[in-house]
Image (cartoon, rainbow, N blue to C red; front, side):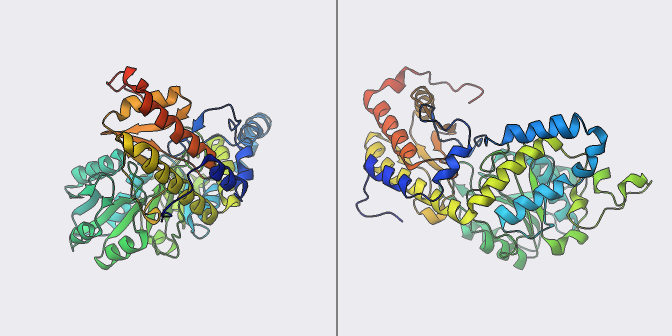
Length: 423
């Protein structure tokens, strides 16, 4: 919701920063000095917490370097321990419902197969036609291997799937629905409880991808009866590049699901080295192999920062930051041909805003050279992600001001029109 005549001065942005209850968290991240770039790509890779190097050094030098194999007493349950930090502190889950393990792709595969097996006689998997590629690829691969049908729900690139189209896709043939809580391209926010309830009424299970939501959007998985979810930790949870993902399984479903990758870390009495796979009770049965101990230490630092800040406060600031960005874009970028490509209603948005322009690729490269770090998404989108844990309101104001200057002086036209392989 926007004011009819919002105050778009830089002084107003400074006043918002002065009143920001989360402002102190900025100093707890590396690279936030005033002469650094304006980093608006926290929805791709979060900043590094200043405590992370020390946490990694402690595990490497003390636990591994000195403790060696004796440190396994504290490492053995790292997946469930850090999972609880994420679950109870970030996702609104109960203890014992979240596990840190593998990658988002592997976790998604595990849960979709387990959910499909729990719905015998149903032969349809539903996904969104504009969802993140990995999600669609995993669904297609599972369907091909099992002789199932994929039913893709159409989606507006900017607004996400229409709830009526989602409802129409649900029938007695549907086993599993895979959907992102926040659309990766536009930031459109799905109605998680409503979709979950509709799928349950149809007898299906939903696997939610929380990658662009966890740490920036208020999620109440337990209260909303969410059954299954996955998500990454290197965006708003600031776990670092390649950080392990998490999976969530509602407590009441854990004993009835059997995931397809039978590894020794999911085995009951694993050190008995028994001949037959017998999964341990609880969330631990979704573990596979040895946990990534060093990476988990970094994830724990980032997740604890998010939990300390409070997801309710982070979500509120995210709405305010993106609201300011939208107002500034309307006033200063729209006259130069830039169009909003995200839901205008803040209640329907995650914590990033996408702007459309025919020369978005060139503008993205030009912005980087002007000290603004966004990212590019096809077909012609500049995506700006002001992560609420460390982004200031003046960062948003200054970024839009530099964007406006580029559009006015036309310097973006010097950049090649062809996209590079790596953005």
